[in-house]
Image (cartoon, rainbow, N blue to C red; front, top):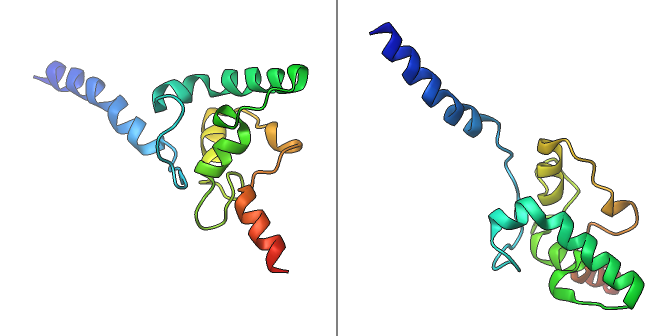
Length: 122
């Protein structure tokens, strides 16, 4: 009996642990992405890197797979940013995975449409 309980506990524990530590993410407006969420979680950096290379070397600008496009959909509706808070879209996952975000050393993490509205209001 003790052995069955022990095996059951081992089988169920990872499920509890995953729920307890998974990041809580503010997905912004979200909506339909360029790829399905599972694919994006695993491969978004390759997509962005490829787009960066195409833009820098060939001048190709495809808003569908641009960092700007991602920010427009995923910036928080409360602060228009993907980096402002611990639960912000980019910050939450990168912190969870212990991966440095270097995109925003050069690029803004704020939604451009919100930035333009704020600028025009002055």
